[in-house]
Amino acid sequence: MTYAVSAALQAAVFQSLAADSELAALVGAAIHDQMPPGPVDGTFVSLGPEDVRDLSDQTHRGAEHRFSVSVVSDAAGFRDAKSAAGRIADILVDAKPVLSRGRVVSLRFVSARARRVRAGQTRRIDLSFRAIVEDS
Image (cartoon, rainbow, N blue to C red; front, side, top):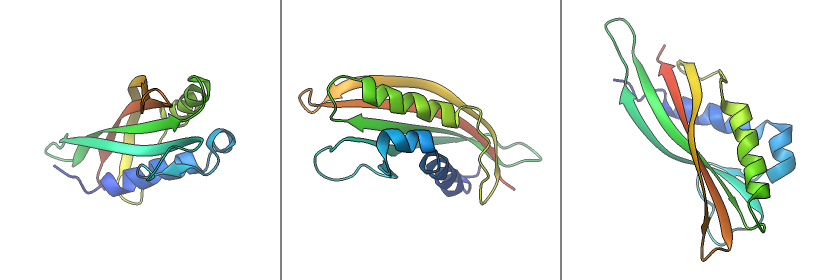
C-alpha cells in the first residue's frame, strides 16, 4: 500500500479549485484545506476527510482515495451552495491534475449530501469523490 501520494493529491485538488475563475466568481478566494473557525460568512469551500485503501499489485503501487469537498453557505436557500458544488463537480470529474508525486488514473464523483446545519442558518453540501492514483 502507499499513502505517499495523498499530500500531492490534496495539493492538486486544492490548486485545481483555486485556479478556476468560475468557482472564484461564486466563492472568491474562500477555498480552504480545513474548515475556517467561527461563524460562516458568505459561501466557502473546504477540503474534507479522506479514506484510502490499497490498490497495489505485483508491479504497481497505487491507492483508492475517497475524499470530500464541502460547500458551506449562510445564503438563504441552497442556490448559492448548489451553484458552487456543481462547479466543483465540473472541475474535478474526469480531471487528471498533475501531481508532484504519482499520477491520477481516475477521478470520479461518488455522491453528494445537502443539508441545513446550525439550527437551519447554514447550508452545507458535502461532495464525495473517488480518485485512483499510482505512485511513481
